[in-house]
Length: 75
Image (cartoon, rainbow, N blue to C red; front, side, top):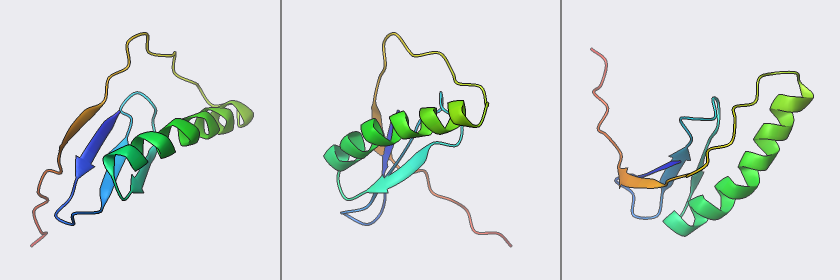
């Protein structure tokens, strides 16, 4: 899972590159971890219920925390 800090001091985003379509927001790093744990279970259940592929569990999960990459404005 990756957590990204934004320019706002209390706004963080999270996503899992191993779980397509999974992302969320929270007010802290701890909030991201807490929410992601619950939301991942729900996301996997939804994938299963809708007969979509469920990725295999990762044996050694990691959490990466970094600053969000700047996005260039479209011309």
